[in-house]
Image (cartoon, one colour):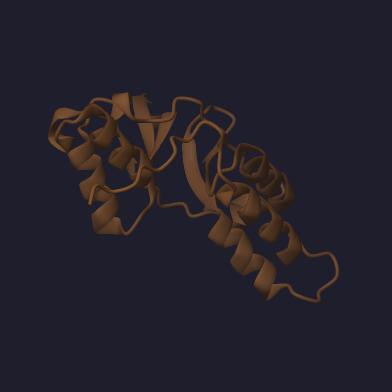
Length: 164
């Protein structure tokens, strides 16, 4: 099985010039934890970044501004880790683990956004295939990736105690 067989082809997007309020509203309306940040040329979306609900919250906290005052470009991750539709699920899972990500945008040969694959997608696929030979991804591999994603990163700011 490859990524194209599992990915979600409906991907909600935002643009770098949109506000964090707009991005947060889209995430809320569609019950999502992230959006692809795109630029459009030739009518096709090219991924230039990703933004998560955590990015939105941290930008508001660190900048001390309202969400409608902060452009997505100020909070998005500009380093895009992605996969291709014909990549194996194992390759996608390994990329997620290495980069400590829960979701990967799926990019075609022309650098256009064609889908998104999540760790949840991989976990559901692993669960469906428990005990089968030739499975695409194992539950153990997904568990290791989840542990890597949730492991504290050195670059994350430490939480501060609330004032009492």
